[in-house]
Structures are given as structure tokens and as C-alpha cells.
Length: 243
Image (cartoon, rainbow, N blue to C red; front, side, top):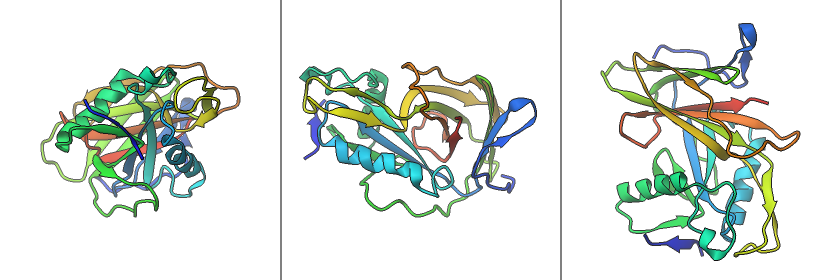
């Protein structure tokens, strides 16, 4: 059982990064919506292990980054059992609590999946979306990120861009809590997240710093998504490998 806690222009889709002049890397979504798939998890939660294994397998999915962008937020409310999750953040717990409040639920739990802002249960991958909210393009040059969102319709809305650094092959030898004695390895871990408002569809920002030291020979990815200002639900997403 899950552990509980009370408390526009049409552009060509890019499936792999394009290396532009000056060493820039460009990721660009299709006009159709790319799903944002979030997992709330913890190293202190034994029932999270199957969900994390399922998420890790998405590294081998051909539709990865094209139809869906996965991210894993490690929450901190399991830390009281004696094992402090090194990837957990109170900010990620607050993000999950925000979803719970919007859904008018009184509890949060792990493992918990969220698909485009709605509660979701993993198994089969979600089908490709048919909505066409617009195109999100991310250009990376070192630590500098340029985000450009071209909505399909000019509705005069204000947007926010969210850029996450993702870590892979991260883990620890757990010595307490429900997973005591296990060596856990995680993928798609959110190591840092930057949130900024967009003016005139474009925004310059910095790639968020990682919260942990990089693992030798492990991969790093970026995930980005757009929301309406003041909202949490993603309307378009994009992502890809940085190394």
C-alpha cells in the first residue's frame, strides 16, 4: 500500500538535440502537447521501488522527450523514519501539497504520479496528445538558457517557464527506514528547478545548479515546461540529454 501523509507557428519536432553555432544545444517540442510526467517519491518509502523501476525504464522508450518528459521529485516527509533522502527537498513536498490542495484532497502519498497536472496511475504509457498548445524551444549555451514559447493562439495570456536539471544513476546505500540495507539507484531526479515569468514569449535564464555532485559517466538531462502564470499544470514541455 502507498505510504500516506496527512498533513504557434508550426515547427518541425526535434527528437534529438541540435548543436547550433557556438556549441549551443537546441531542444524543440512539436506543436502537439508533450506530456509532463511527474513522480513524487522517496528513498524512505518501500512501495516506491516498483514505481521508480518503471520510471527508470523510460530511458529506453523511443517516445521519450518526444511525447512525454518524465521528472522525479523526492519529497522529505519520509525522513522522520531515520533515513534522510539526499535528493529530497521541502520545496518538492510543497509542490505535491499544492497539487493535493487543487484536487481537494486531504493527504499526499508516495509513489504518486501526476500527468499534466492530474493524478495518474502508472502502467501503460499515456497516448500521444492531440491538443496543440504551441511550440516550446530551449536553447542551451553553457549554463545560459533561452526559452521561447510560441502559443498556437494569441490569447493574451501570461506564462511561466520552468527549467529542471535531471540526474541519472544516482543513489545511496540506505541504512535506516523502510529500505534499510538496500542500494537504491534513481533516474530522472530533479536536482534543481528554476521558475521565471515569460515576457513576449521569450526568457533568458540560468540552468539550475545541481544539488549533488555528479556521478562519473552518468547522464544529465534537461526538462522544461510552460504553465499559465500562477498555475501549476503544464501546457507544453520539452526535454533532452545534455550528456
